[in-house]
Image (cartoon, rainbow, N blue to C red; front, side):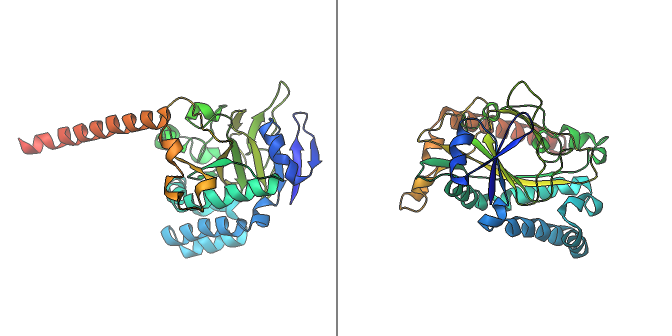
Length: 295
């Protein structure tokens, strides 16, 4: 595995991998080439994609992707079914957040760190944009933003992530400059890195970043999670709270309490209140729908 600091003048600087965690915390985006292969996770992620296609679409289509690459997903899987695949794989890959987060911290730091790992993964398959234009349901679905279709410039703490978390952004298939992400690290042009399958970006998730609209003829396939170095979680605003795990507790008898700090936060309370209101609206909608039949 090779490590590089990405500079906002489109240059890269080779680094010793075990010095890169500190650099990422300080605001320098890091490229780890071949990281997923080094961690033994590239084939795991790839096979989960292929297994989902084989199970829910067809074995023939899965065989086509095995031979031609996941970037050809849109050749055999229609955009609405890609959206369904993403939901299933978000759930199936959640257990891989911990081994991925641990592998990144171990590979990028020479000393023991206290840190948290988000208890989920983000699965992405950005099909060519032309394939979802005109589909109002796909364009308007907020949960597909950043997953199936591009997301505008943003900082992750505004989406209720802990402040200054580090994003672990992995390429499962090849990613081009025409369908990658844009990292706005200064006043110069954004960094838009091309990645080979298995490459990984590590960057401060509060840095302004966005998707490059995919006008290529490839599907951009990736997986990611987030980590937070330190002993305390300070969530940003909003209601998109997710549990984060205290890594130091995971292999101890206290493992059931690993998410406790994240649950005892104002962000978790906001999420609970939001879910309660949402469930109440769902019940009211169902009741109104049954009312004519009752009369």
